Length: 237
Ligand code: SAM
Image 1: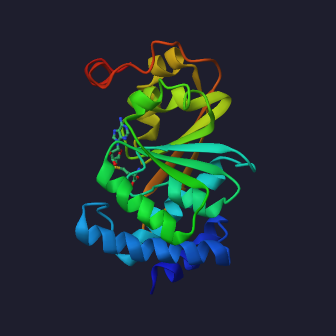
Image 2 (image 1 turned 180 degrees about the vertical axis):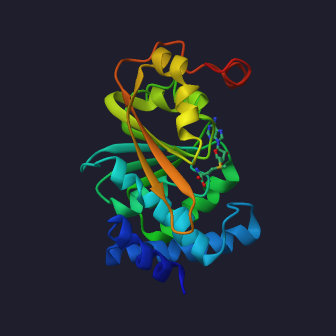
Image 3 (image 1 turned 120 degrees about the vertical axis):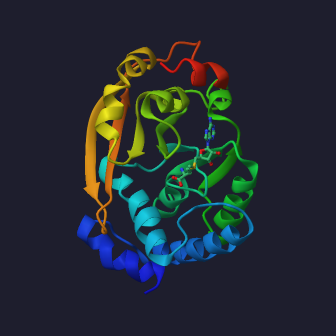
């Protein structure tokens, strides 16, 4: 079965719609992901079923945790090969998505894939999150931040919440460790103006557990955050 057939066979069970437009874009994405992966180390998951379930369906489940509205701005921090940001951009052409990563060679591939998919509502930004989060161009300018497989939650909050407007949310795509990570993120949440607003839990076909933690931004972030990378690594909140 092709990537798209596997995706379509499973998406309906999760209430996820695959429109013809999205199908066409994801077909190109799957093909180019494999092509690029032969040249650079873009993702560890390269088989058709894995791409369909662990990449595409997993990312599309974000739609169960948040209601994106036309004109919303979303930043995907540590997007890697474009997950979940490029999938969100493909599914929601009326939402503006920034794909941020510190690894230039991955972004070169993502930019090529984005262009060939015909996704006009996404742009790539090559920066570290801690640097971009200090800049007026990015700081508190987004309705949503997303991140998958980038860091543990207490660290991730310092990377992501600076981008989010008060009243907006950070959607953290996690696995089975979500509840433990929330326990470990109490200081970080309090310091950075975040509040847990819900957790959506899923079991993917094949049995992998997933959780999307919805962190609401309830107050402005103190100006000293985010700190420089060395400090974040040495003394996580
Ligand atoms: N989100 C993608 C996914 O789920 O497939 C990629 C995950 S990959 C394991 C982590 C990515 O986060 C890498 O591409 C890395 O360059 C990026 N990253 C890690 N720390 C970062 C930071 N402080 N700022 C920007 N990108 C970062």
